[in-house]
Length: 355
Image (cartoon, rainbow, N blue to C red; front, side):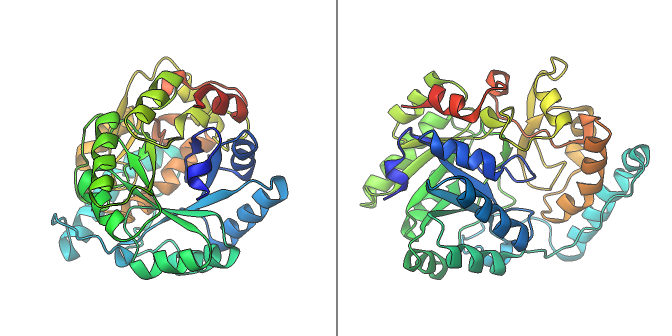
């Protein structure tokens, strides 16, 4: 299994929105790690170009991450959440609450686009056709048919999970690997239930629980990648000791020259004015950890659990904020260990976290 044989035991997390690039994926692979392209928010044509770009740069294996839309998520969603007219009304109210912020940036809030699937079917066709080494999934559990189709194409499947129940469901579905994401992780929480509050256990404890569950189910073969606040070798070694085969890292790569992190985002990560991270739905309607800004403080409690609608509503504000080099309205996704991120080559990050 390719995922089990990652030389350095370091995986570059998929970071949708531009931070993940072919250059970053290739550099991590050449350094003995394994990189994932982020398929989320790209068109299928853009993703195809990035896949080709990685192959132009390296012969090392790599993966692609896809967002699972609600319509393709087979996980038994346990919580209620807003639906129908109530959901539309909550989204409209949130959109209205952003009017002053949008006007200050010279834009209008975006349209909600409910039901957007992020071109799910075409992207699945692409990764099957291109036979990428691994395909990871976030925001949901794909069907056994999808996992089987990938296996027949020679691709390994990975599902992002945030608690033991989610891990059990993914293992029973036959996935090859799990990305076990702890509360410390930057970016979106990969809960399979879009309205649930994720497990807040320490990552090492969560990995131990998931590994035990895999053993109980006779799935000793599954590869466990641990994600969440990993920016130092000490942290990486601790989660490997808890049962992880590899560490999946995102924030530690954000300041590398190979990453596509925007200038305003890079400056904020090094700015002492930002003193903490916070989990919020303010940017997309899904929970995600980012640097705490005034925008987040003002809008966090107003934001309903409505993805992808809120993502589309806030896109114009986030883009305008980045272009104006005013990071307050940029989604500054970052894990709890963001202070340890350094502007060094990706290979240096891999070497610093390698087993």
